[in-house]
Length: 192
Image: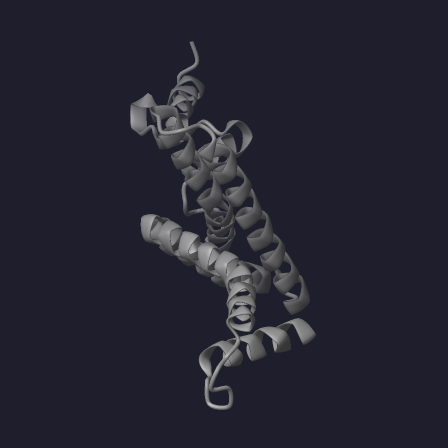
């Protein structure tokens, strides 16, 4: 608390000349230095966050929508299964947000050392897909339970479970006849 009070008085001292017609230059420089040392890193972090947000606003919007939908459908699922608990809901949601945000930040830091290359861009996309995948997959599983397994179809659910196992983004986004799930399903339907 004394630190904050000291900064506040430094700011006032630096700005006000009412009572001190001849301020001592050294005192003004010390007050200015304290303010720069304290607020400089905070301004840098806020500016970095702002630049990141401007470059990734679609991702942030998608993440917020995914978390809100996950909360809504998760609550509905737990109400249907009669396992609802506000304490558990808050704990699980906080844990999910903490884990997803921490992993995103750590993987982004790792990606910063890859430089500007195609590999770096692909890795950045993989980080964002993986980050969005956790709340989205939980939401889709809740919807699957709420619809008594009718929606989304087993085909989509297999894609989610397979992506969770192996993380193959190309396989996840393959459609129709390209997908190995489709090939496996066709082989099961037509044994030779």
